[in-house]
Image 1 (tube, each protein chain N blue to C red):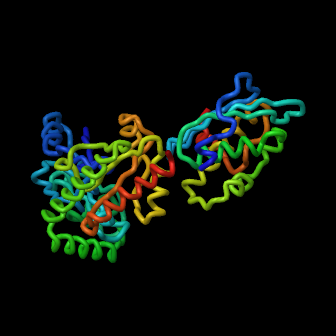
Image 2: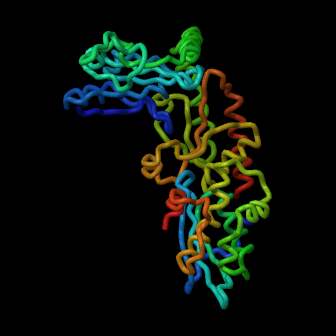
Length: 243
Length: 132
């Protein structure tokens, strides 16, 4: 079976990928479409029907929930046709000396003792995000990303990567001319601004951009515009220290 | 910062007796080291080139000062703590790799040229980290 897999939102540039188009293209070629929504689900409404994908994965810890738990959604007919990948408690219907039948979905794929506390915590996190509302979260992040791009554009010695704010989730990747991202992050850390620096597990993308690594500022519901001002202030200090 | 902005012994030596290069794939730091050896395998001069974060480049610059006049054997056995003490700043595990990249490349260069032993703790996997 052929599989086309993509992130719904890029973890390094924030690009919102056109999964609907990719899914149609994959299906035209007889492939199954797998969407990794770990970077999308915290930030925008994720609708598996609208995306047209066959499988979709999310992580709880990126949605204000506990670590070690997530969700994998799959089309029922595909899951029915699949064999279990893990055996253990709860996943069988009947076991005989020569024959075994598997349990109903989703138990067939949930062998062994589930991480119960984590699953309940995940549910609480989803309730929390739903109470805020994903449309509001998306809109707010969009405003933050647009503001950050606007502030970074004031600095001629900073290069930003990725699409315009309306086609990205709430992250901004950038580089300061002549300063390695790890050094940028260290100086910002001294200023109480925490960003991610590195290749973001995307070495092929870094090569395409022609950089060793990038800095990435991430925004969420708890970020305020003043923190973006502090980021920019910190970048002036980076520039001063390294020029 | 001084060593980063004005690195000592910068530039590779034209007629080196030992040379190696390596990178830290996690950060993209790159360091190339060349060494000229004198009588009794004493390091007469060291030159390096590289690009990467301030820690990797400054630590390599400091290292080139530290090892001149010492024998290849002595440097092959040099503990990383000696360089870290010289650096004198606290480092997270990730940045520790930046700090000791130059030392690893230098030890590799001496190993290739004079057969000096590589650090035991490198095992076989860490040797891949320092690419030739």
